[in-house]
Structure formats: structure tokens, C-alpha cells
Picture (cartoon, helix red, strand yellow):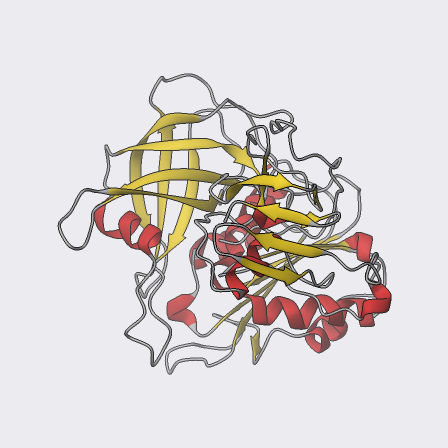
Length: 384
């Protein structure tokens, strides 16, 4: 899961401040026990895990749309010592006092590229995590969540991107929220649609919900109106034809290709940026192409030096982050959430300062920065 949020906040510039998530549910990692697991789709590629705190204490509420961070001990495929990886997964249900739920899709190598490794975190959950397993979990975090602004709501999901939107939808339905709610959900066909019966039940029991399931390639057994409402891609034209005229709060989550198409298309349709909240999953968060005239400080020449690699490069103000810059230079950096939550990409700042375009949730050691949400304010030297 990439957890880039659409609502940008600027963090005070500092390369030495220790930042702690405001309102954090608990400090560090907490032990949870898997109560049960449940396959959610006909293809068997998505599994939900119900997690209860090992200490039996009530759980704090969270904002629907947020995610959990896991420190997973995974076996070494060569038979060596198990290693530790950090992964983030969206909470896929409304807040409850006794358990959390995540829904994990098994990540396979891209089509035609079997030489690439499958997802280590998702594979570990599917193959090794059973009832009774203990997991180390950091508290709910993330800047993508339901905003209580009173606007009618449009939820737009692609594939497994429906998980944080399910948390939002289940919350709205549970409290009987009177606002109109539209859910546009795009998958390839019925075998990939998750929680099909749950969505049908919500549609029947929650009169404010307008459900629009889109199949790009319906299978032989998929029936229009019963299984899906639209054959084809989930695009801006479908939204324009379906939604009555008015102002809405849009929440989008899906693969980068979908997001890079839909978010600018909504703006082209006249939707204000303040009404578009999004999160992209995959290897990187949503990248928006901007001209140098649109980027503050584009006329300021900034140099980024990677001291251990001996590389010095010019900073591109249109770049996504210092992490993306390092990876473009072939510099290997450990990373997990890519959203300032897990702290994996924490790096020592030898000189210069770094600012954040969204508030980090991870604790940052003095003299360090988080590359995944960081950008230089001037010339900077990093211990990489």
C-alpha cells in the first residue's frame, strides 16, 4: 500500500526535531492476535484478518480510511535467518472497540515478468498467518480519511483500493448518515470483486447508498444489473453521467494508473482541489506532472549529495520525494509505507534541512529525516 494523501500539510522545517504522531493510539508496536481469517473473493486473492489486542484492553477509535503498520518477521527463502519487513495495510471496517480488520491482496509478479518476486508481505499473510498468530502492530495512522464536512460523498475504488473506502462506507451506514453516498467500484470481473454480498446488503439496507460496480472484462457468468451496473472502465465520463449536479466530497483509492487519470479529470470537470481526497497504492504514490511555473522554488538551484555513494545531483522541484530521487540514482533505500509512517527510510542529514509536505507519523531521531515525504529546502547532504 502507498499512502500518499491528497490533503497536503506543510511541516515545520527541521533536520533535528523528534516528531511523534499527534493523537497516536499508542507508542511503538503493540502485540495483536489473529482471531480469524476470511477469504473475500472468488479468486481467493484477498483475505481479511481480524486482529484483537493481546492485552485484552479496549481499542481506541480511528478515522475511517486510515491504516495499520506491521513489523513482520518473514522467513529467508534461502533458509537463512528470518528477516524483518515493515508493511502498511488499510483498515477495512468501521471502528470497533475489540478488534481491527485488514484485507490483504496477494501481490503476484506482473504479467509476463515471472522473474520478479511476488509481494513478501502479502504472501506472508496469505501463506503463514493463521488464527492464533501474534503480530506487532503500530497504531492507526494516515492522512487519507473521512472528513466531516457535511458534503454528499463519492467513493471511487479500483481493485483492492476499496479497503479504506469500505471503512468509510461501513461507518456511514452504521450511524445512518443522512447524506447521499455514491460508491463507484472498478474490477476486472466478478471473480475479483471482494465482499460482493456485503455490498449488496448495504445497498438494500442503507437507502442513501448508490452502488455502481464496474467490470472492465465481464466473465461469462457475470450478469448486468445483478453483478455489475457498468461494463467498461471507471472514468470521469461515467461520473459525469451518473452524478446529479452539485458539490461532493470525492474519496479515491486505486492503482497509480487509475489515479493519475481520474484526479486530474475531476479537476478538469471543475471539482475544487479541496474536495478531492485520494490515496494511491502500489510502488509509489500519485505523481502529478506540473510545469516549473507551477512549482514553488523552481527557479532555485538545489544540490543533493549522497555522501556514501559519492553522488551529487541537482534537485528537481517537480520530483516526488528524496526517496524517489535516491532510487532514480540507483541507491538502495529500505522503505515500507512510503507515507511517513513506518520510519524505514529514516536517514541521517549531514548538512542542510528537509521539509515535509505531509506530517510524518513516525518518530524521527535527532539529525535524521524521512526521505519518503521529504524535500530539501536548500543544498543538503544525506548519509546514503
